[in-house]
Image 1 (cartoon, rainbow, N blue to C red):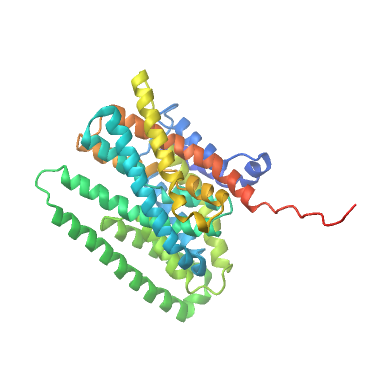
Image 2: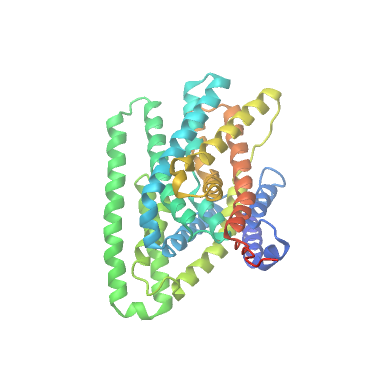
Length: 392
């Protein structure tokens, strides 16, 4: 186990500190990191399993990634993006749920399995989406801010739908208990936001503000505690990390202060840990029959259409290229889909066909997004050629 952890950390370190190589060769770093995770994991070479240590490291990494995203937040743009983000998030959940349910039910005629497949397709991996846009340099753009708002909405609603389905298909669990649990989660989120605002104001008011290391260490520690609290109350741990960064960003001296640079650099170091872990989780990818191939293909088409079409609801606010970038950035399901699959399997509502289909969907959507997002972002950010006004 120790050797596996050392191998995991060494590979992550090599990837983290060789950005210039990937940039010079124009290679999609996120996609290659995920592929490398699949290769070293149980799916191919079985060099590394996702044991408790690796799982904790990957969870810590995604908290850091979301802390950095929150701390880099442009509040003016984010507030302007909340309404379109809410619309895109809800549309992405509903479209993916309906398309995923329809694709699964059409092929398997199993209602409970179709529900779980639809829920898995509804999710967006906020950690991966943020990582991809951050790598592409588009996190601070209008698309990036809408994505952040949409992903938070998406995360909350999908976890509520999953809890409802879990209760509905379990004996002895009433819907009132699920609703109460959801309301408690939202109340805790509000209380956490207020508490973080008070703590951030106190740190900003006293001498700790002037000493870099204790200030930064305190923010990271608070992010981990917040992540633990949000997970404890039924929400994703990434929400705690993001909210911590977002609240503390209200009190920073400037949009590009030294702490912003520090957390962004920390995020770049943490990203390979998270991406490798996602790849290692993807184990069984065997497609044995033609029927299985058709089923996987249907689920894959539904998963892509559900997210790519969701930005159409705010079409007037985005150019066609920006809409495509937002849709592709929302494609990765990653750890969220795997969580849904594991819950469904434990309840015996997902067959082997459905589980393999969800794993394949996870692999393809993550790799597709990892390749397409940087290319679209570079096209959008490229300077437009100036018109030659001279006459011959």
